[in-house]
Length: 189
Image (cartoon, rainbow, N blue to C red; front, top):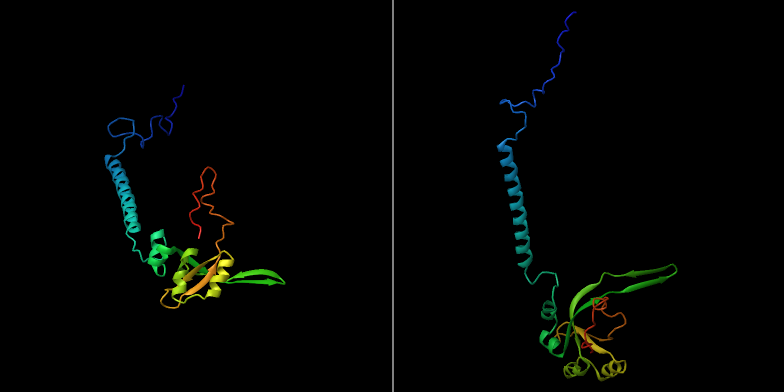
């Protein structure tokens, strides 16, 4: 019986899996493991540094920034802040114009301008009358319509005074959420 020749391939483990020490289990290099932990620590440090810088930059903003974040900022920006807080309420006044075409029907709105203003309580109109900023006729017309006065600009330098109406039809949708209780109506002017 003729002898068979050896097959060109070996039945043993491929050389890439064999270890030089004869152990067949693969081992990772400790250098690579240390490198992975180092990269993870560096990434975590950068992440924490970013959070810290973000908090520091957002809390250290100057109060003269264009963002209005609180009632105190609005109170300080109002014309005649002492008069406004004592005899009324500070306000943000938005001036805009609306153009309506009928054929075809379209509505166009101008860019609103925002400026600080003040709304006076009805029983404090005498402040405006004493300085001759409103006439008796204006007071009478505004009183007949159950409105009040609001103004922009300092009282000493010809302010723009308007008879304004308190509109409660929409209400404050922040307070009308299901499960919340509406606060007492203390804002009547």
